[in-house]
Image (cartoon, rainbow over all chains, first blue to last red; front, side, top):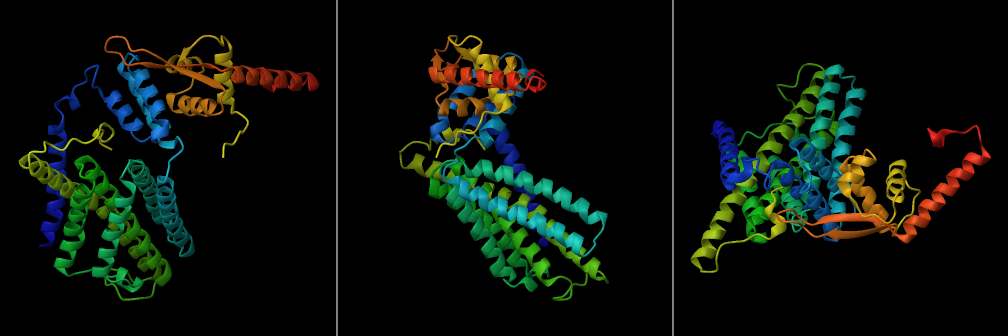
Length: 310
Length: 104
């Protein structure tokens, strides 16, 4: 049963790779009209708010006249950087700030505990790796949160994933320190809810591309929220609380083990939640297309802006 | 609320490059190459300058399969701003002749 829970995400990941490969035959062709730098620039310009759309067109117009793969790629990479930081961010700025506070708070808490309990160099290495991981997660989420129609359902989906996890696992800080050994709980937490959130995102937006973005944002924010909660739990309870037989015999060993568990939870859920959610959104998108086709209203045609996958 | 902070050194180099021939329309990529800026630095600067009314922008129609291209040049306000910057810089140099940082 538990082995299956790890096997299903791997299958979903494989399915995503196959779907990405099949989505556009030109994706891996490096022709002048559809090469990687142009796609990257298109993706970047999709991050801009409508009032900055002209600047996105300016970047696309410019790359259309740049020759040479290296120059084009360097220009496109710069456009990504510009689009990520270029204000205004509209209403998405509130969500981004909330994520900054959450992520920075968790990393600071982990660092503070490493100092407080004198956990040694190993914990600092883990904290540094974690900081890089969280920064990457934040960048990915901030790109998603700026897409039109994605921020609210995505953040709400993340809340649903995190709250469902806590309902089944237990809300108290003590519950966070012990593993949940009920198999069907894990099935619901890891597979059913993220899948349902992804499917609901597609159904709500009626756009498969937006649905997949909603699923990814929900998975990322849900994972980050759970990580913050478990890290706070370790900070509050410290070496006390329920006995964990893997916790080591010393206070430092116990704290280090508990922090390690929360890091593993982040690494696991950050991969699994978005992957399963993506699969749910893709299935719902397929059903939506079929439903509309059978109703005679034609296939779902996402708007031009959402055609660039985030 | 629009904040008019003093321009950065990079923004000043863009302004100076545009001021070299104020009447001429310039392409973004050529401008970036001239002032040794990456596109990631250039476009936010151009956006800020345009927001402050220091820049005129226009579009060159696309040719064949090539897309339309955005063009930039200093607006009258931009020219006046560059003139002010140059005068202020010259004034500082005159008042403190030993300070040659601006020439570095």
